[in-house]
Image 1 (cartoon, rainbow, N blue to C red):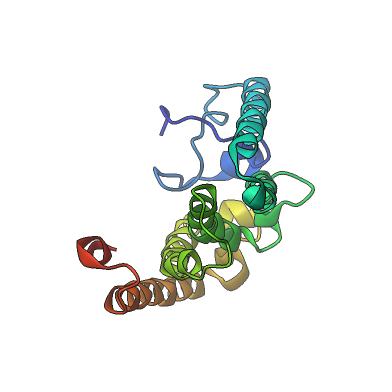
Image 2 (cartoon, rainbow, N blue to C red; image 1 turned 90 degrees about the horizontal axis):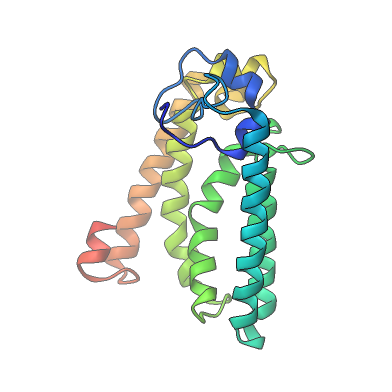
Length: 204
């Protein structure tokens, strides 16, 4: 993990990462700050630069978006910024308030699909991106809940309310298992109903 880039949110979760003795390739952050490969000031500058670039891209995207779709795109862009930055950063700190798994699951499934759908001219009222996003939401939720189990002790020590901390590791694993089954059932249902047809649907 020492070659992985540091996420800006790691600046706000430094104490938890520092105390984590079970970090791995899928949990515990990149550890760039913990091992001293990057300084906090460098991560802050990179985060500020990324925000400037994202703002520029957002303005360009909105300028190329037809007028009828401009408001939904603006709402989606704003929502993505709030959820992405608010996952660990104050004042929202979703992951410290028991909403981390839900935020990650939504942004990595329904939000991503809806953003792609609307940005390519799709009507946000259409149920298709929401339906396709549902089993992906469950799959990401399962993976993210399980990934929090090795971080249980470190998260609890800094009052980060992951599901492993709230419900305990055993119950969190059970919740993740139920979500994984729901993801499979949802994906198969969408394929059988023809909403995601053909070979792609079968793989999905």
